[in-house]
Image 1: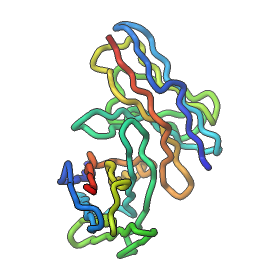
Image 2 (image 1 turned 90 degrees about the horizontal axis):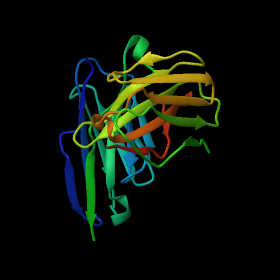
Image 3 (image 1 turned 45 degrees about the vertical axis):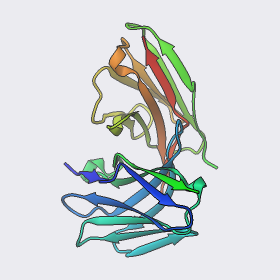
Length: 114
Length: 111
């Protein structure tokens, strides 16, 4: 089965620093990876999608990388703020008939300390 | 903006009751999904639907069924609620750019 792992359950970081979250996948490289933000008691909200042929993607203070050699995606938040505190999920599509589905990692809870 | 709405934010039911969770999306998306989310287990797919009247089992379909009579509405049914179905239930619809829009979630407690 296609697995996706976020090794850190929690990450604490000082305000203003860059937060880096890691997502690792197994087996073949997916066509894309997605990152979502989830606040307590709420549904996840889509942030970024990066395709296999893209090394890096940016959106404001967010940056995502996709390394097919390491089978890894890194998610960076620069100049982090307390409002960035949330759980961040990465997700990969299934294969074949399951390509419409997403498999989510368990998430990394980020806390930005003022 | 895409809106995915769920019928209840909080729900309390008793063991053995039949429970209906409703989800409605307003963007004409073909694919819709039901997940449950539990601490330490993450988001797990229960059922999904490719289109009206079409459904497929996800990773944990036992104890659940679904109904999709209209494109905008996808219902999750707990035939006989049990305490191990206490969870946060999330509905999502899939855009044509492969991302998913989630509803606000229903926190279900089964006593």
